[in-house]
Image 1 (cartoon, rainbow, N blue to C red):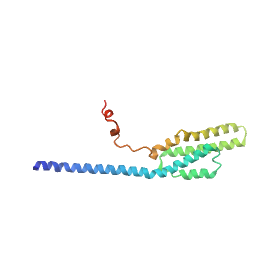
Image 2 (image 1 turned 90 degrees about the horizontal axis):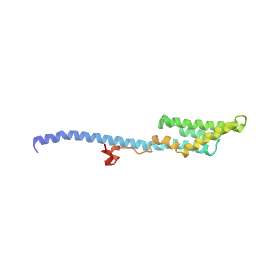
Image 3 (image 1 turned 120 degrees about the horizontal axis):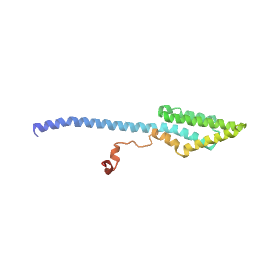
Image 4 (image 1 turned 90 degrees about the vertical axis):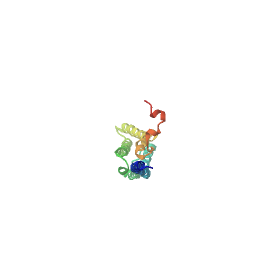
Length: 169
């Protein structure tokens, strides 16, 4: 090797080492993100399970709120949602609670009778159907899915496409 060749190799070694360091750091961050997602899954699943349990109970019997233990279990199961989920899931959990509370109020009004008993009963059944739809139509899963990390992390999305579609004009 001549002196010029050695100088070029030495000059290229520094950027190559720097590139390797950046690549290693990026891989460590990606692995840390995956580990965090996996560590959070169990905690997030407990919140999802509390919502699913309450919706199942509301679907099977309309008078869920009469059972204080059920509502307390839901509150205890979902109280950590602010730490593990964004505002969309938190708002959805609150929507579930409000609809079930209203369903219980309407059911109590229907039992008491009176002029609005039929309207209350109709509204109570509509709310019970709303609860059933959350489970049967996959709405509950869809609301939790993105933040639960149920979809695989994408890395280099352009490399997952077939070669022919990457270079198409």
